[in-house]
Length: 317
Image 1 (spheres, rainbow, N blue to C red):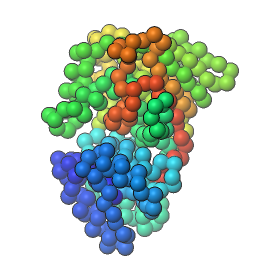
Image 2 (image 1 turned 180 degrees about the vertical axis):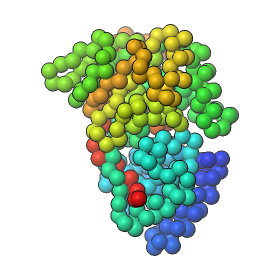
Image 3 (image 1 turned 120 degrees about the horizontal axis):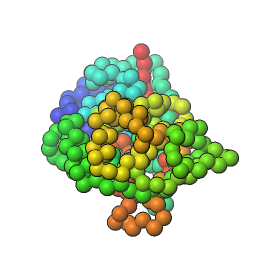
């Protein structure tokens, strides 16, 4: 198991104690691989190749670490949501109540039941591959995530709202070049060039480019309302918004998924997308560092690819 003890205003520590006790009473040998921070936990997880299952306690950041350790390995992943957003757990229909989620994980381990879902493999020119459970953000939402991660106050979901207001106040659109493969829906994106092999290219200015495996991020922001976690595809949001006023109006609409009705918002569906700064873009004016599941990934360029069935999430009725 791996735990964020500060998740849920300290509930993570309490829930982890309950989880540890119930797993032991069910006959499992339990090892706590939690580190002093996310990087230390990730390092401990990367060093273990003998796990029968991994259970994470916390929010989407812990799901990110869990996906990084288990995606593509066949090792089941249990999720006990105790975070602020819990978007991945919500999309999979896992219980809101952490103690009920503990019971669900213990039953699933006993019954050997898991749901097979997709994950996003993220590759770039300088870093080893990373795994993302929810979405890869490479625009305004990434800038908001970066600011929110650096804030101590306020706590909870309000932190993301405050960070969004601050980033919108200094917003400027970025110049992108996209390459898509396995395109099945062009989203009506103007200027998209589609090729016979179902690949496509696009270059233009946008406020957001997000490759989503699930419908919601950031504690309920319905970035890609129709995204399915088990269809082997990414829903790629391109918001070709260039003004600060338009950017300010997008975020409230995203909580209801109403942004998809705007003419400057497009949702494409593809197997993979490579996101780059447009040629000639100075580094100082390029898009922000990409984030995945709200955690920093790397500077562009990067490729996000949906890998069907990469995760086995412990769940039972």
